[in-house]
Image (cartoon, rainbow, N blue to C red; front, side, top):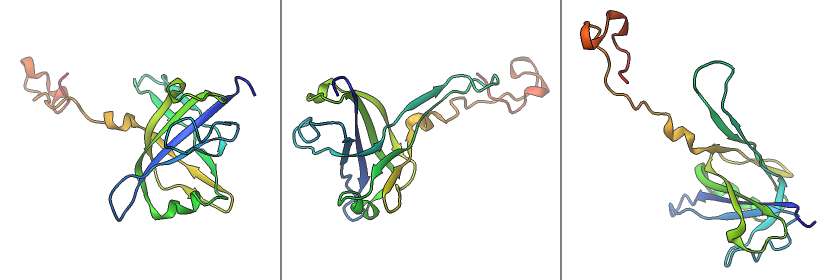
Length: 167
């Protein structure tokens, strides 16, 4: 097991009665130090599928768009922790994924490979709970240009540019 990868996931849904975020912490089952890696926080070894991050820099065209995504994370649902999930607000809940050696015992030595939010509430069935993360790139989906060409000629461009954003 030496040098095997270990994963740690922190989920922060909101308690609908208090409006305060609570933390649920999980790790991969091959992590022997699950309860000792971070003082005061217990990581339950219920991760069934390990997350992977993918980045696409070329969409096949020349739109200039790129994307980052993380595969869904699956947690064993046969435990008392996951049974509490339906009572919380998950849309937009914060989450973080860390990676390191499975035998790591020092929190500072882990690498944060993803921070983002939950796309929706976890999908629960009899044996599994699927988490759908979303990266924070949606925060950049805003138009930074506010002025448009009038299309009147000169500095305001020809008629074809009317209504198009100025750089």
